[in-house]
Every structure is written in C-alpha cells, then in structure tokens.
Image (cartoon, rainbow, N blue to C red; front, side, top):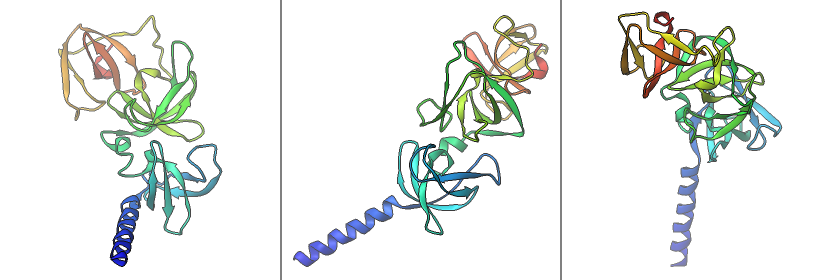
Amino acid sequence: MKRKIAIALLVCFLLSLLTIASAASVKLAVKGGSICLRTGPGGSYSVRAYLKDGQKITVLSTGSSWSKVKTSTGKEGYIKNLYISGIGKLYADGTTYVANKYKAVVKTSDNSKITMRAGASSSTGNVGTVKSGSTVTVLGTNGSWTLISTSSGTQGFISTKFLSDNNSKSSAKNNTATVNASGLYMRKGPAVTYDIITCVKRGGKVTVLSKANRKWWLVSYGKYSGYMYSGYLK
C-alpha cells in the first residue's frame, strides 16, 4: 500500500514538473534582434547570456512580468514575459509594426515619468519607466497604445497620447484639425484594416491627441477617439 502511495506521489510530482515547464520561443518586435538573459527578475541583474528572436526556450516558472527560462544549452535565467511567445500574448496580438522605425518624444503635462507596459493595456506588467522629454523609437501601434524602444533598448507600450513627433509643431494651443474630405472615417487602429468607429464630415473639427504616427493621427471627436488618416486633416 505504501509503495502504491509513493508511486502515485511520484507520478503527481512528475506531472507537476511537466505543467510548470513548457516549450516556448523568444519573440521580439525587431527581427534578428537579441535580449539579455539575466540572473534575476529585473534589469539590474547581471547578464548571463543573449537570446535571439525566434530562439527556442523552456519556461521553468512564470511571474507577473518576468519568467525563469532555460536555453537549449542548459543556461537558466530570467527574461520579461513581453518577449516570450504565448505568455506575453498582448505584446503581439493586434500590434501593427511600422515599416520604418522613427523617433518620437515623450510628453507629459507635469514632466512626470511614464510607465512602460508589457502589453497594450494598463493592466499588464510594468517593464520600466521613461522620462518626459525622452526621445524613443516607435516600433508599432496597438489601438491607443504605441510600442516603443528606449535609448537603452528596453521595449514596452505606453499610451499614444504621451508621444509627439520629433518634427511636429503641435502644442496645447494648436491641437485641432479640420477634415478636408467629403467624409473621413475614424478607425480603431492606424490602418484601413481596423474597424470603423465613426465618420466625420467635411469641415468637422477634431482634437489631435498625438501625431506620433505620421500617417495616422490619434484624435478625438465628441465622445469618440481613434485614428484618422492625416492626409485628409489640416
């Protein structure tokens, strides 16, 4: 009887290990890029190795923002959930990557720091902060969120409203635009493939929230907010 119980406990233990450890791969916004495999769950820990985009890994344990992983060569360490295919699914789901990366400036009314998120939602993990006035690289957009990379290489999402184009002359005093077409659709994302929210007729005035995406501006109109093609806004 004791032997059967011991065997059953061993089977349960092995099954729990299989549940915890799962195969995955590294997923980055920049093809061919690499990230640091760190000795602990944070950017202050030392670098153990570098992982490339698409590299196969085994997830040993999952945290709220960082997970412990193992490489095919046996090296163990931590990377952000943001970079793990499947775990950080909000990172990729719905994200439109820009064809040509460009610079933008982080802007806040009180010069405070902005929290970078692991996905396109304020409920996802904190992956770092970025100061107001910092220049960042825009990698993609996801609804009203923008995927950015800081000067140190940290990638994460911030609300698009906190970004302005490096070359933009817009300001708090000049943040409106007029529709210069018979009718202009407002969409849920910065592309014609996104669903239509509403249509604004010629002469309608919208409030420009961000010009970080040169072709598609984030705007508001009455109770609505979304993206409009900048070519028909003046």
